[in-house]
Amino acid sequence: MSNTLYSVITATGSYLPTRVITNQHFVNTEFYDAGGNRLDKPGQEIADKFEQITEIRERRYVTDDLSTSDIGCFAAQAALASSTIDPEELDYIIVAHNFGNVSATNKRTDMVPSLAARIKAKLGIKNPHTVAYDLPFGCPGWLQGVIQADYFLRSGDAKKILVIGSEVLSRVCDPHDRDSMLYADGAGAVLLEARASETPVGIIKHGTRSDTDQFAHLLRMGTSSNPEYTAQELFLKMDGRKLYEYALKTVPQAIKACLEKAGVPIENVSKVLIHQANGKMDEAILKRLYALYNMQEPPAGVMPMTVSWLGNSSVATLPTLLDLMLKGELENQTIQPGDTLVFASVGAGMNINAVVYKVPEAA
Image 1 (tube, one colour):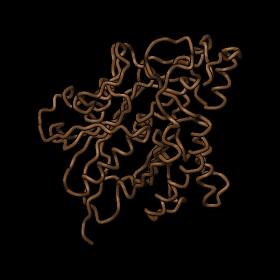
Image 2 (cartoon, helix red, strand yellow):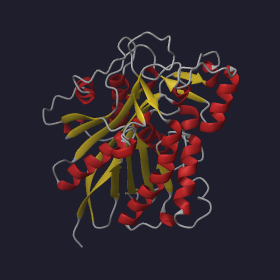
Image 3 (tube, rainbow, N blue to C red):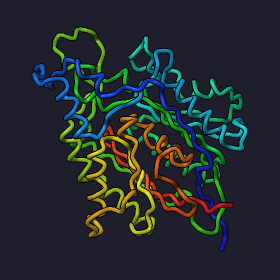
Image 4 (cartoon, rainbow, N blue to C red):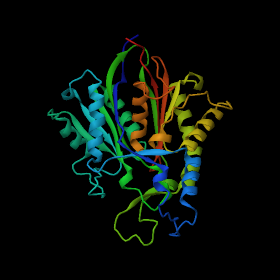
């Protein structure tokens, strides 16, 4: 049997911002509904209900001195430090994000130069053939970057690619919208390398879908829910109930389709790594996935979670989750050689993607 090129994750890194923001932070906030009406419920009741619905009790925010490209660079440095390569050997740097280089002094979208160009410069990489570009694709952006990297690596066009997800949502969410409690900041990165193998390893199959016809604007930018807020900023807005229903209907089917394409039975899946959007929603997605296989309950521990203490950092949730697991920093959750992983994400667009990944056996 001849060798085939596969894409293998050889190093990971992440950055967890140092500011820990608990739900108590929001107790005295004035929240308004989509119609501009102030909520008359006590702040503690709103915070408690939020935690019950989402399982989020705290999240991380960046300090005022840091921007999106800064924390993306930190995650990249961590990944490169745990690798054996010279950064000058990188063929591509792909950076997923949605709002550009958001800083404390400028919350408007800033995408020139690209985050990838800024991060490459911060890393001090001089090689002009290290191609750096951005990928705005909603929350599934990092995983879509991994999928693009897979095409480059399998084609033989590249040997080493760094894929980063970096986001600062704390500065683009409406302080008067309850949904702002979902969002967090963070960054994660992986190094993918081409590996020749007689048997499938690394990325086995992947799939992506974009449902724009009816669902393109479930996540969008809009003015503050507070009618008295007179500043000109636009904030991240979502139709939470419709998004929840969309995700439950489509994400399990998308994961199943990817598994079938890979020829992998659900019983062989060791871990399902899903975008950390909302704890209850992710649990419902997982249960529906296994129900498609006539299994009443998913295996215990099959879906590791960080959303309860890291919140939803969009493109950063999956690479951060992977990094914490591989480095033994997630309690009672490990990844072993030979494991089959499923990555999945859903977000603005609306976009969904999934990847089936076979962890290489120990050398």
